[in-house]
Length: 586
Image (cartoon, rainbow, N blue to C red):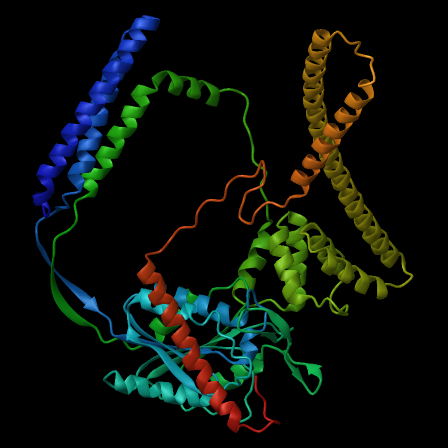
């Protein structure tokens, strides 16, 4: 074992010497005071704790010199795999039926895949009417993450999908990067058909994986301005455009491709590992053996014993507290945390949900089971994706809508909750089961309003008590001021020899009333005066300052994202000027 950074050894020895001197001085002073006032001498455990502390800190400082083992010559396989990620940025990808929306979900899965795909050369292409490469072939994960983050705020609200052109032009990137047309294509889209149709010609050496992002229920396409404020939803001939995941598109497309497969991604699923296994199984790997000389890192041989020494130092220093803790652990009192327990059947259904094997009715039933088990947040997300709020589906039990509304009510989404309740109430009949559902809705609504009323009463009471305490303090201060002024008046009257009940008595009372009214007016002004923006309220904790990136790095990342968004949106605008009004633009 030797060290690569021996040039730092003198500085580390100096730091270690300073540490020893400071610790010994402070401990000597501390135990001198203990012996002087409490007559306790330093125990043997304390001496052992200090020695162990010095040994552990010395080992950690030594590990900074970068300990390495002897040189070794090994042969490592160098895989050659190239993968192009195509992301649909058309208007339909802005739909929010998958949280947070389809485009951001696609970017998240792409980033997850890039981190899992070790040894892959990855390129990223964004497409709508035209395709735009935003990352050339690289294994720089930071560059890939930064460029994928630039797609999150993209608002291509009038762009349609030209999947055929994007795929055919992306195949040329394999040739430009050198070699034959061989590699992997990973396409993220919602399957919305274009006016030109989809006709793909994929060579045998290219393996294609489609990821369908969206739900069969679909969603509206939001329209936001440049500042992120929503001003409406996309319309076609006066009606809201509802974009839905087209699973038949993927089935028909992969049937014409020699090596292809598709996955459906919802809010919960991240099929990155399955896609990677598909590529590895299909790809004909050409591996070259390369000789490499390595020096294995031996830092753990120093760091682990040093940490153990520091731990023993703490144990010896707190031996009495440690003994008390063991005694309490062996006692009969145990605190148990409340846990959400799921049945094996529910866990199995969750796995099937991640694999995309559940239909709408099965997803709703799973959400019902999660809600009863206590996993209300997960149940609410499933309800949001699979239950329409404006109508009651005949394929779904009505009790599911009751649970959906109750979950919305408990999460604070009151307006949506009562909207679901109202929709369910309109579809209830006179049967006993429907009457029971109606009674449960009324009980839930009554309980919610009672809780709101109690909270309001509590807030009013606290406000009233605070005002009373403030008035009492002000009154006590006024009484003290009046007492002082009365004593001064008596002294003046005694010196002049006049009776206190003279003609000036009325004037003194009027002056006191004026002073009291003046004090009350100043208090009201102080209460009505608004606090300056950014000033914390009384009793509230001061906000922590946000963590700051290096200013130059932050500026570079922001400029790169803005540039990518402008380049993608500019091509879409130019094509929209040439398109006919009757053509589909989502």
